[in-house]
Length: 459
Image (cartoon, rainbow, N blue to C red; front, side, top):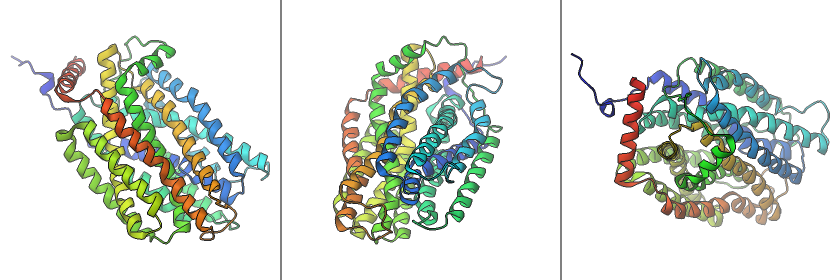
C-alpha cells in the first residue's frame, strides 16, 4: 500500500544542467545589456563618435519614458502566453538572434552620416530596439527560477549558480571594455570585431540554453485580472513597494558604477589589477557572507547591513577616491555590495511574489517583473544622464584624451560616480524598516505555500 507523503517534506531538486544553462544564458543576456547600457554606449557615442552630451542625455530620458509602457505590457502578455514550450521559453529562444544582432550593429556608424542629428537617431533607434528585445528575453530569464522551483531552498541553489556566472557579467564591462574601448581618433576595427564576437557567442548560448530547462509552475488556468488592475495590485502590495526602493537603488548603482569606472581609470592612478582584485575578493567574500547569514539574520537585516556598509564606502570614494588605499577598500566593499544585490534581491523578490499569491490567489511573476522594470529601467536612464550632467558641471571635457582633465573635473568624476549611490543606499536602509516579510509568521506562511505548490505539482 502506498504511503501518503507530506509534500512539504519532499526535497525539491532542480537538475544541475538546468541551473547551469539558465545561469549561463542569463549571464550572456546581462553581459550584452551591461556593455551597452552600463556606460559603453554613452562612452562610444559621446567620447568616440563626438555626440553632444545633452543630446545623449535626451536619448536616455526618452528611453526611460518608453520603458513606462514596454515592460509592464510584456510582463502582462507573458503571464497569459500559452505554448507547448511554456510561457517564457519562446521569447528566450526566438528573441536571441535579433537581440544579438542589434547589439552588434550598435558599434558601427550607420550609413546616413555622422552629424549630431544622425547620431541622435542612431542612438535612440538602437536603444529602443535593443531594450525591447532585452525586455522579452531578460524578463523571461529573470522569472524562470520562480517557475522552475517552488521552495526558497531550491530557488536559492539556482541563484547561487546565477551569482557565479554574474561575475562574468560584472567583469566584462568593468575589465574588458576599458581595455578594448577605442580612443578618440583611433581605428575602431579591433573593438568592433571583439564586440561582434561577444554578440555571436551570446546568441548561441542563449538559444541553446532553452533545451535544458523548463517551467514547473505555469498556472496558465488561473484567472488573471486586466493589465490596469494587475499593475494597481502590485502597488497595493506593501512589501513590493519597499522592495522597489531597493531594486531601483541596485540597478542605478550597477549602471553608474560600470559607467564611472571607465572614466575613473582614465583620470586616476589606482592600479586596475589591484582594484579589480579587491572587487573580486569582495564579491567572493560577499557571496559567502550573505549565504551564511541569510538564515540567522533574514533578508531584511542582511539588506540593511549591506546598504549601510555600501553607503559608507561610496561616500568615502566621493571625497578620498584619489587615494589608492581608500579606493581599494571601496572596491572591496563594492564587491560585497554587488554580491548582496545579486543574491539577496532575487530572494527578496521571490518572497514578494509569493506574498502576492497569498493575497490574490494568482501567480503573477511576469507582471511583477514588468512593473519592476517600469521602476528600474528609468534608473538606467537616470544613471547615465546624471553621470554626464554632474561631470559636465565640474568641467569634464569629452574632447580631451585620458589623464588630461583638470583637478576640478577629476573631482567631478568621483562625485558623479558615487554621490547619488550613497544617498540611495541610505534611503534603502531606511526603507527596510517598513518591509513586512520577516519573522515566524512569514516563515509559516511560506511553508504553507510551498506545501500547497508541492501538492499541486504532484497532482
